[in-house]
Amino acid sequence: MPTVLAFTLAQAAPIPESSLFTRYIFENPWPLGLLLAFVGVILLWNGLREGLPTRQRLGFAFGFSGLLVLAAGWFIVTAGEHASRVTRQLVDAVVDHDSQAAIALFSPDAVMTIGSPRNPGFALDYISDRLDTLAARYRIDSNRITGMKLATESGRAGLTHLACMTTVDGVPYPNISRWQLTVAKEGDGTWKITRLTCVEINGNTPSSSELW
Image: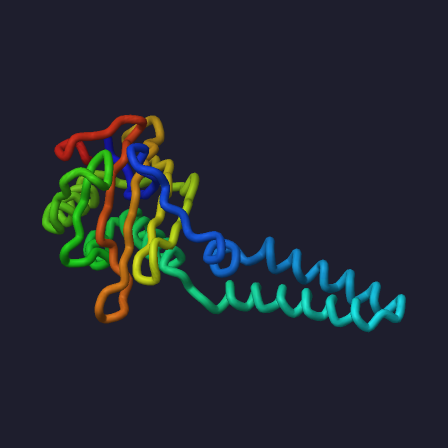
């Protein structure tokens, strides 16, 4: 059945995750940063009220640490966050039927696998053909991202796991697709898709000839 490209966990493989430091300092700094800042404000206020210099210094240290965490999360972009950005660009290109913009997001040696990223893959020509077929054959009425998870594998590689619910003209029910996307930094500094895995479409793992 037709479906927009989206990306999520391959059920046959565990979800790689960013390290705790990367996840809670760079990719999601708000819980830790706000907690440190809140504790700092409480300690500083209490220290000023009670006239306790040590508590004032401790409050300032906690508050400053919270601001540093928030600043690091704001200014530092991880590989997982680059992967998330490229994923959204690909989804937008496919929804807009812009197969040229979509294929430009892939590395020249990119592969597409089905079922699991460990399975043998199809080369870029196959990916290009599938994108062209999707753009020519179906009109996407709407697409909604129903879930996203990103992970940083290393400084030069990130993963995106995402699920979409897509409605297509002429099909009375929505299509739910699940995929896995790997994005890596190229030699010229750009971030490109190196592996795309179709995990399932509408609860089933399709064959290579059933991809729209």
